[in-house]
Length: 135
Image 1 (cartoon, rainbow, N blue to C red):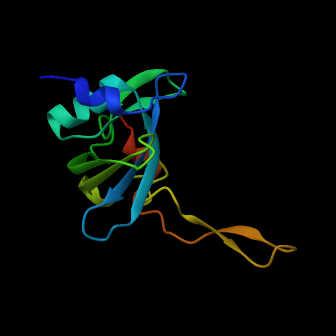
Image 2: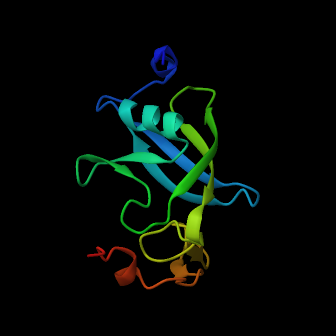
């Protein structure tokens, strides 16, 4: 498979590009992550979301431990060619490691002088059970 299409992406100094995962149908933003060339190439080849974990410094297949994978339906590059948008079907309905449907569950409420972050999305699955290794 030719990978010249990867050269069009404007990778940052660490060889990464920001990625937004948007839910097919609802268009809800599920999560934000990073990809390197290998992650983007694997995502396109398998139609399953793969990301680069900056904290673990490794490639990861979304849902590899939790089973909550992302089936990729569309891959887009923004006008500046430095952000990827994935349209995904979220298996199991949980995209966030906190057990919520999406990662954007805190909403800023109040005016500028009294603003506070409030949790506005419920936990759908106990996060402690998401990452238990099966024996």
